[in-house]
Image 1 (cartoon, rainbow, N blue to C red):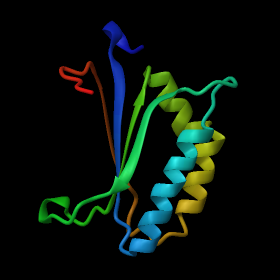
Image 2 (cartoon, helix red, strand yellow):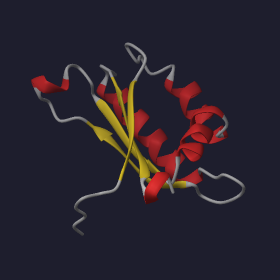
Image 3 (tube, one colour):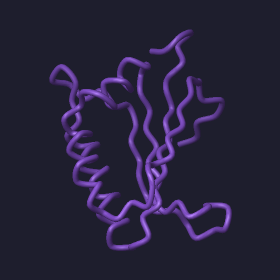
Length: 115
């Protein structure tokens, strides 16, 4: 875990105008969630991707991916070494993404979790 038991929460947002390509990108994230491994074991604690609902506050972002990692080392592995994420980035480059994705992450402990 991160410092003081906190985890890393990460949101990545894409501007992909074509709905068919939006669906493909979401499917790529679903595949990544199934196949990701570090040292032979899954290391991403949570992964969820979907298309944004139409809303002027979305500022043109159409696909959102949320991830949770145990620590910053795992997120850095995801960014720099994970072959599954590298394959997603390579395939995703051909989907008409208008600009580099917006990536935001932070350390935190959920204040509320309801099932």
